[in-house]
Image (tube, rainbow, N blue to C red; front, side, top):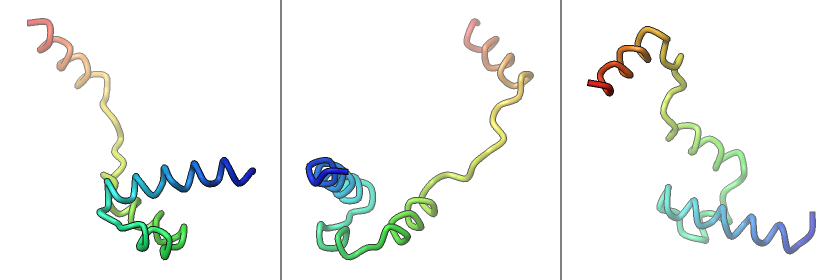
Length: 65
């Protein structure tokens, strides 16, 4: 990875951390990748089983009417 690609990716991630987590640049740079992953995992909605075919069909019927 070149320095240019790292810098662009770091700037993008810093912006995401500021927008989503309210982090300042200093907080972002002081955090470890594991800390960032932990907070983003905790903030994410729990994974579900998705929608079954019966529910999907019912939703599509509601949309048609």
